[in-house]
Image 1 (cartoon, rainbow over the protein chains, first blue to last red):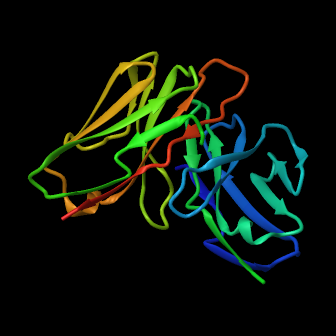
Image 2 (image 1 turned 30 degrees about the vertical axis):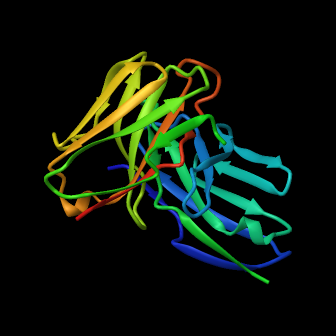
Image 3 (image 1 turned 180 degrees about the vertical axis):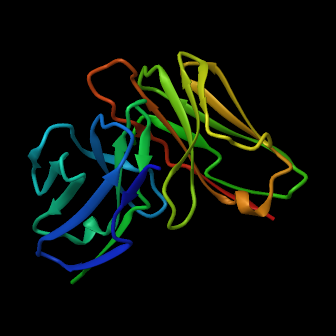
Amino acid sequence: GQNIDQPTEMTATEGAIVQINCTYQTSGFNGLFWYQQHAGEAPTFLSYNVLDGLEEKGRFSSFLSRSKGYSYLLLKELQMKDSASYLCAVMDSNYQLIWGAGTKLIIKP
Amino acid sequence: ETGVTQTPRHLVMGMTNKKSLKCEQHLGHNAMYWYKQSAKKPLELMFVYNFKEQTENNSVPSRFSPECPNSSHLFLHLHTLQPEDSALYLCASSQEGGSSYEQYFGPGTRLTVT
């Protein structure tokens, strides 16, 4: 079966760095997505990785290792507004997105 | 604002009611999706429409009936729902065949079945 695993909840301090991991087992691979979802709002796109390596976009970076079935989202200089759920999703061989259950990130002052 | 709107934002309905959820995308995309999001569970893909044709139906019960009259509008018709159908229903759109597979989501309809 297809499976995406990510931690249910993480807590970090304002100004610090946090890494949210995602491991996956899917039938085929056409890229990995990270989305951010604030409570009561729509998921919004953060990043897309299809090749191995690190993609940096401001305070957020996303890493992919296809051989290990592993990705992480790195958030630097954390701000209170970063408190949200972070969803990992993999596009399978049929170009359908397989979703993780999301990681709820709590930022403390 | 993602360019995808959904109405209503909140809906409470009894198990014998009939209601419809509406989604509209203003992005010129050719694919639209219905997802169900329950607490602490992964997003569940329900239906996919490409160029107004349904291409995916993930074993969704017949009490959920989608309709896609054109590439900008998507409906989800609901009837005789069960309490376990209470969830957030998200609509999304994307441009199939393009260079980006990113999906754009609406804010969702929070559905409570009593």
